[in-house]
Length: 150
Figure 1 (tube, rainbow, N blue to C red):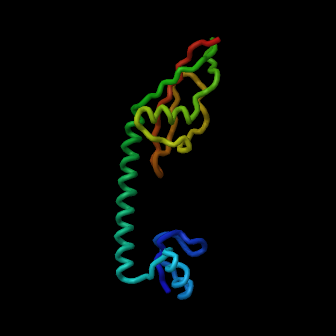
Figure 2 (cartoon, helix red, strand yellow):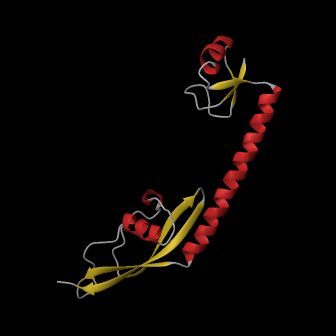
Figure 3 (cartoon, rainbow, N blue to C red):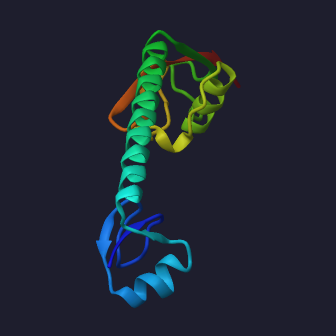
């Protein structure tokens, strides 16, 4: 029996796939638990519509990410850190701190999405790359301003 999966099922397939399974497995397990529906003309039409909607949503998300990346290009985040007489920085600025600063500016970014995961430890301007969406990477400038501390 051909069925359309409504959810990912281990060792069977992923959501939205059309798979061939035995009649008993389809009726007694997949369809009974709401994991799949029988493949009919009407269900195939519904699947096609759902895939079109998902593609449009993906395109919208990517467009939003590209717009955010363009806005990040023009942004510089300033951090005041303690430094020594020769410009040596005591401590560093982590991706978590950069993410918090971006949140204050209106951008929601997960600290795990940073491509450059090393903390910023040098005075001056450093470019940090952030993966905003699949294949969309934004760059933000991080400036460390040193103040001699004891």
